[in-house]
Amino acid sequence: MSKTAIVAHSGGMDSSICLALAIREHGAQNVLAFNVNYGQRHHQDTAQAAKICQHFGVDQFSVAIDFLSKITTNALMDKNIEICHEPGKSPNTLVLGRNGLIARLAAIFGDNYGARQLYMGVIEVESSNSGYRDCSRHYMDLTQELLRLDLDKPDFVIKTPVVFMTKAETMECALDLGILEYLLENTVTCYRGLPKQGCQTCPACQLRNAGIREFLHKNPMFIMPYDL
Image (tube, rainbow, N blue to C red):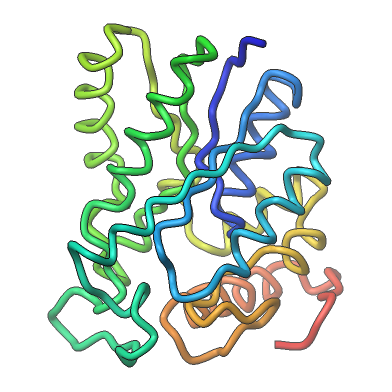
């Protein structure tokens, strides 16, 4: 069965929004979700990714590349390393080249189905606030050019619908799609794998929850499914 688009789907908020946008544009039957287990310190996000795909009626393919922990070290993959982000330095949760690797694997897999579009839920606020170098549109532009050569598809595109949004704006997008409450309850952003408001101390939780508070300030009538 051919597919129009592949979505790199982690089970987090941003990639789930991308999944919903791809479904709206192409139809669920033409979209395939691609999930990667890279040896992260928890698997709650992977479990939620499968649940979300089932809810949206989208086929999902999962692949394990947990050998990554044998060639690189970081706090996102090693529970023995305390999560921290020293000022002026990259966070110790940075997985070197992760988004580029996931994009390449997803594109290669999608090529089997004739897909010429890959959705990535990268967001530049992660690059500027969290030091993730592989979360910018510039990074994806470079990756796209390489993949066009690899696949011999000059029309292959990497779509990054939320890349220039703030976290609050991603909430607005999810609200417009009619899925915000569902995603707030079912996506996992926390580095420690805790659902909903998360641990509230890791950088991912702080960024997400700050975005939610900004969204609520602009949308006071929205009722949160849980307390922050």
